[in-house]
Length: 609
Image (cartoon, rainbow, N blue to C red; front, side, top):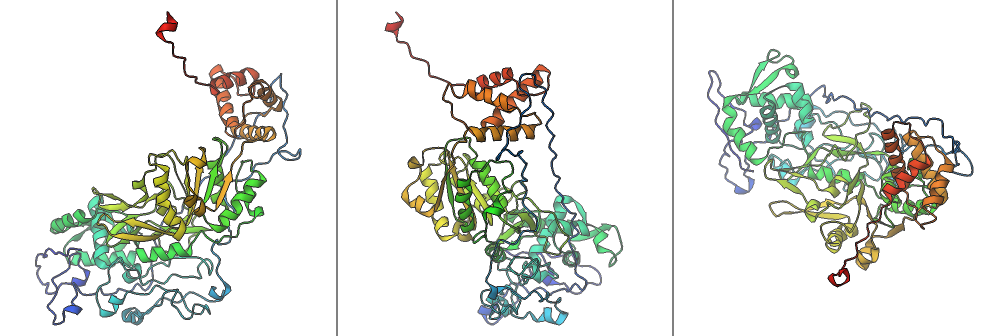
């Protein structure tokens, strides 16, 4: 990083300047040994005796309500419900995952910490100043006995007294006992060093937040950066001493800093211009890359213990055959790839959406990560679904979510599978497979992408084999990222024309999704009528089959009951009547839905004459 500084104007009575809190480093003093040169003095830790929380409001998803089906008033077809299983009334199965499930990551008994072990107390001031060496989970000699906390090892350059780069990892220990000994739980940072970020980087985040907002209170700044108020208050105090930030109002100095309103001063103009030329990221503080890698490995989607009984109520209203359970169950336990094939419109995508509900537990996804001073946004509100917050204390730079399901279709290109750099904002967007980490990635409509199937398969061969994905920065640097994804490929084309033996060897599980039979066709129609609030009539469906399926040898498809019923509802509203399964409406729906476009016969000039 290019280091710079705009000298602050002298003030009366000011004789010293804190260079350790500067957003623009000072010039390095000359030293006799070139190997021990540093660019700036190490940041001085500031202790927070009381700790701080983020104060974020809870998010509670609202459960949708479904209308109850009215009683049938059809004079021609009296209401008759065909049982879904063995003559019993069909019951609705919940599509939501059962709360309180056991974590999906299983560790051996030798790696489990004792249940009576408590979290270590906050470090004292003397301990924080001494910076003792901490062991990584892999190298800790006491990991087997469970007697030592698992911590992230500091880089070697930290022992020399240099300021550590923001991308080398934090000194914060990840509490293995929070929420279970075998799950990842990010501790709430207490001081700046616990975040793994440098004082300069946090100061730049504060300056950019004030620039885009105009003015902000201290508590709003802490909520924007998702950092404790004590860390943000110390950062603002350092910027005030440099004359970059001033108090606009809200309280007196030293009392109620979180309620004060801060704004930028004219002296920060040149410094801020250079900051925005490098990076315009304005959001929660990122997570060091090494900490993200450790979290992905600990929240792995591999090695689950999913049984048939646990899968029964995870697919909602889908009619699942036994052979489908037997095919997807072992594949989910392995966490490896699966290949779906079969005719279109029979629930391949819907099956994948139900599969992700079978994975127990929730995971933590970072808002952003830091790689070589470049910010990469990971959290996507369109793909990641936060769970209800129980008010526990953890690092709010992470979002507690359900395991994600990322679906990509015909729009997929090879460029989307790499880090997407925006020259306008000068930071990265994570690719789809990285956003799907610890979850499921579905490549739907495989073979219909703009890129050829062979090129797309070649891109996936190495990650599927080694569980490592290679990404490239715009500087040309190659980066190894964990590929901890349960990948699913779905196609309705001929598989023999799409895949080769090398791909089939790496995709161990293949499953054909077949068409429903007549009994299942009735069951699907009954479920869709219940969801749409229309009275189900078995005789009307028998009429539909006898009049429009058997005479034309028309095959069933799982999507047809939903599509035909939607057309019946639309026509009923057009006619000004309540929707019902009427023969005339069913005939009109079939004539509109099943249309065959035959090519006209070309007539030559000779035959026309």
